[in-house]
Length: 126
Length: 267
Image (cartoon, rainbow over all chains, first blue to last red; front, side, top):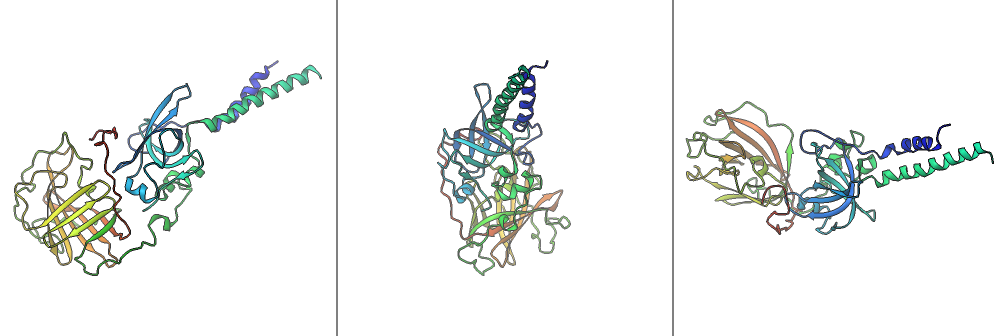
C-alpha cells in the first residue's frame, strides 16, 4: 500500500507551484519584460540625485538574508510624486515591484513600494 | 471505523497540513514573478513592457496634464524659464551637412577654430570622473534656462549640473576637453545655435564637435536638433524637446556624504 505521506506530498507540491521564484540571466541593465516582486526589510534608502537607491535585505530561506540593490528615479521625480526622504524607513518591511538586473545579480530598478500597512508608494510622469 | 477509512482520513489530514504549508509559501516567498495586479501601480510609461502588452496606459497618463503657471513669453528669443525634457524617437533626418558649408538653416561656416577636431586631445578619463559623462546627458530632467545678451546658462536639477554657452564668434583656445565641452552661442534668425567643441566622452580617446539648434515654439516648448561632426559632416544625432513647465520649482537636495553611500563607484 502506498504511504499516505507520498500522496499528501504530491498534492501539496502541486499546490505549491505558484510560489516558485523566477531567475534571470541576461546581458545588462534592467529587464522590464520580467518584473519581480521582492519582499524584505529596508536597510537603506538613499535619497539622492541623480538616482535614489534602496538596499533591501531579503530572507534567503536558510536563516540568512541577501541584499538587493535597487535603483529608483531621481529625488526630483519622487518628490514631485509626493515622496519624502522618510517615506520609507530602515527596518520597515516592504514589498517592491522590480525590473531586475539582466545579469541575474541581486538588484534592479524599483517601480513601486508597498508598505506593511498596505500603502503603495508609486511615481508617474511629472 | 474501518482501518481503510482511518487510512484515508490520515492521508487527507496529511495532505491538508502539507498543503497549508505549501499555500503559505507564496505569501512568504520573498522573490517571485509580479502579477498584473502588482503592475497596475507601476509608472505608466513602463506598464506595457512590464505586462507583456496586457496593460496599456491611457494617453493622458503619459503626459503631464493641466500644467499651471505663467504662460510663456511671446518673444521667440526669450528662452528664460523652467522646462522638462522629452526625447523624441529617431533623429532629425536629412543628409549630413558639411560644417564648412552654408547649409540651409544650418550652422554658419566655421574657421579652423582652436580646439576643434583637427587636434585630438587626451580624454578626461580617470579619477574625479563625473556622474554624467556624455553630451546627451546634458539634457536632463528639470532644466532652467537663463539667457542674456552675453551668455546662456542651463541649470539642470536632476544632475546638479550647469552648462554655459557664451555669445562669441570663436572658441576659447585654452579650453580643455570635458564632457560639457566649450560652447559658443549665436542667433540664426530666432533659432539659438550652440556650437560645442572639445566634448570628451569617458572611454573615447578623441573629442567631439556638436551643433545644437534650439527653436522656441508657440506653446513655449523648445525644439532642439542635435548634430555631431562625423568625417567632416554634421550628422543628425537626435531631437530633444524642452517642455515649458512654469509649475516646476527646484527640489532642494544637497548630497550629505559626498556620494560615499552610493556604492556605485563615484564620489
